[in-house]
Image 1: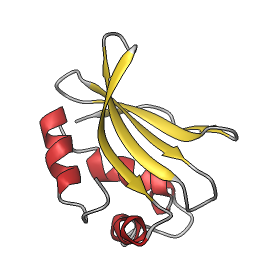
Image 2: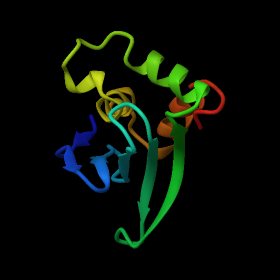
Image 3: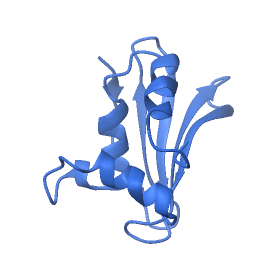
Length: 115
């Protein structure tokens, strides 16, 4: 099972969480927020000791497709829980993935416009 790091909130940058997959790959799940529910959700894989990254997933929460994706991600979340937030919902969605290929596949199942 993936190892989930701490959720870090930065008032200027947003929030993020690092996940180490079973394969040893690390991904960074980020909510670059302009508002509580808006902004952009991304997943990037770390390359070369964190100096380079590859974007695996992006979702603009300020457009209708992004709102639809967020609605699906938070559908079963308890109000007030971390899973009810955009970052927590996306971390919860990919936490069972064991490799970058599984993360890509799972994120590819989200609505168009949320990739």
